[in-house]
Image (cartoon, rainbow, N blue to C red; front, side, top):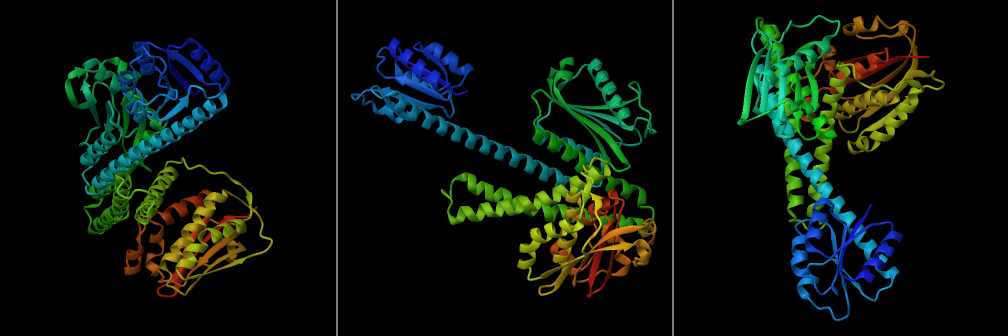
Length: 558
């Protein structure tokens, strides 16, 4: 509800305004004592403050100066008569009401200032949210860069905790780490010191969290309060937490990727976490799992040259992706927003438009990569949401065609569809199939030279009639019966036969100059594979160098 404060000594005018604001359904209060005004504003800021300049016993200059320290975007309105001429008060006010104005005009002035206050609040909140988001993005970028530059598991866990501190300013983190030597270690990073009893309570809490993650499955290691080693880092040892710590807001997450378990982390903060805080926390905890997995592979596979070469390639690809696909967009976003927020461009001039457009384009690019990472994490954790229903796959083809038509036209390509009539329905999630098909067509656009054609085809097939490269025999032999088949044919650079299976590997990009030029996260096809497998289907491809590729996916018909 809109709150109005009326500063006046005139009883009749106080009553008149009270009647008016009751009609407007505003929360109304009136004071003449300066101390009461300050006490009220410190507890309940008002959108509208009206000063009655005909109240001669009030020192309005000192009151207004003090009031400004309590308010932010409140509208200051002076109730004046025709003889009023104080320039200092006029300068520090937002609007004026003549003592002889009727209720309709007064209501109009108040309503206009209420709208102005609302607009200023919205702008202030937007700027604050933008600053917070930019800060978190920079913290995520900095943490991701550190992840990409190390294969030391202890350092990666420390980078994770440093990133959470930068982005979330926690009170305490409790991290059960399987990355510090041969035994699990509890890492406690705290603002203040902890008693031995509180440390034992934190140990018991993290052990219970750890055991709940595995339920009936075998634990990676047996842990007890007596045997669990603790490494404690305290920022301000002069102060000490007590058991009220457990009343703080908290979040918990495993540090894992697929079957690889690296530990778990719980974070405490005295003030409540926001939704954005939760997303940032989960993102950092999930991001560290990828380099931790690479570090584990490096340690396990370095005994043989072949496996070592594979690990080095994964490491190089990961570093390249993070540095190229994240650093460049984030730098552009930061520079553009800095220029915009500095006010150097003034109104929306061509210069402002240029930088805003640049920020939008690069933030969308970064969002796509992060979404791929999060999608893959959800799929591997079994947390991807699906909404299955009976549907016709041609609807998906038409949606993708409409969505990508502008991109295809800009690349100077032609898109042709060959959709079979009277296709049986499939039981599928249309959004996920659209994600798969969009990825396949987008890849075709990336690797197809200008002037060539991309063809999308749908048809009903029996698996006994399917032909496919021998590389995919183990996948295709599982299919039985009738399937709706969708294919995307391009006239691009093609893929060597020995690399066909690798295109569905995480972070894989087949080595050639064009693939390096177009870039990408290397997660699109692995995600597509997981999504199609969730539909009890299969995805595969066939290709020849310099003659193009055909990517297929098949989903059971009803």
